[in-house]
Length: 347
Ligand code: ADP
Ligand code: MG
Image (cartoon, rainbow, N blue to C red; front, side, top):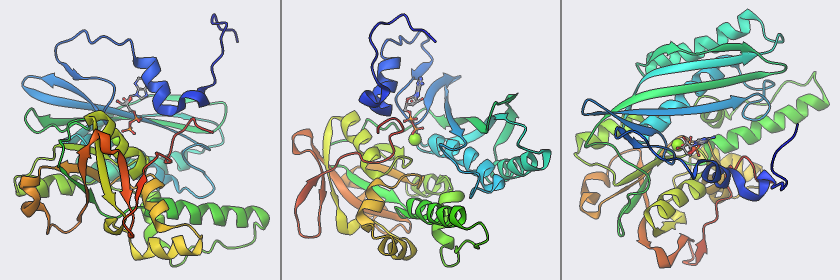
């Protein structure tokens, strides 16, 4: 392999977000109907007065999933749902999906049937049509690329960089569960490697395992918010962890924020697992990824309408940029939030 450039910059110096920024910095939008390109959960394209949303994700065996503990049916389901989640994060509804696979001969027809069973189940549940894809062989392992297409009314679209100072920060569901599920699966994998005759000890971890292996997109929340006539001022889905994803809202909106430790919603089973693994539940909920919950901001005027909705927690508010991005601990100290979540390219 040769490169024309004499200089060599390591990707780890930029990190994932730095790399994306660098590679896409010279893009000039050519079409008036390209409303939003790179930079949000999904691209926004105007079609006859409506907005079409497009998002894609690539999953690679050994990087994003481990065949030792990932049932193929769950994998098919998850590959679809994580794309639906990006559409939902724009306040839109997924309608179509394309699904491409690259497989080695290690996989049988029966295995791929299972993968598709999960994919079709997600399509059924979210009322999405599977409309295409591509199939190739790979030299090793399984690669999955899914692209979801969604729809949102022009006035309903919500971006991640449009929060206002004083807005209230909300999160759906609970945090850190998917990460703790992954911890359990990784532990059992090590046990299995040491002694393949040992049965995995997964009893009692059902909730966090399901959160890791079979996440859901919070389309239900969009409907609830619509029902009370609240449009978030900014929104993102939690794929990389709260710390990393709130930073996208803050830096995009040129604001700071205060998030309160004692307001972070954590499920009992997550707490229990965190204790067992000697991980603070704050760390799990701030830095654990893959919860696919929605993180959004609302105007203060909408506080009364949202404060009692089941499944939505108010965790903080947006401040002036000069105040920084902070976690306020139970004792009242301000700790600057750093994105220690999932950044694929950092060491
Ligand atoms: P998410 O976690 O919501 O899927 P990402 O962090 O993967 O979002 O991507 C952030 C933005 O950068 C998105 O708008 C995405 O489409 C864009 N993006 C990511 N990788 C590339 C790439 N290689 N080329 C162009 N755009 C990219
Ligand atoms: Mg996203």
